[in-house]
Length: 63
Image (cartoon, rainbow, N blue to C red; front, side):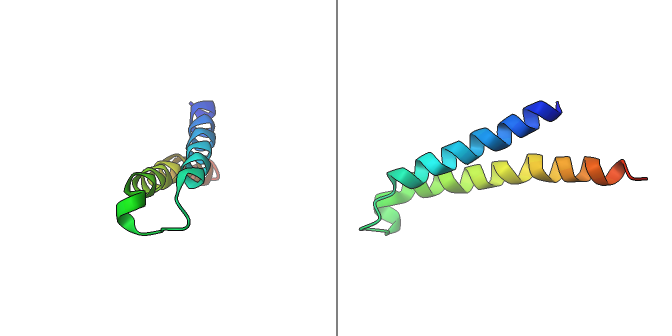
């Protein structure tokens, strides 16, 4: 399960980098980059979940 969490972190990071390459930097308004912004936001949320789970597991092992 631990390897799956690390794999999820890596996959989400790669998708964020891919979404950032799609953004039209000459026009940063929401209407033209709506899909990219939503993709980045969802991947950031997805990054937080396994990171917090790994951190919680490491903290609970010390007791």
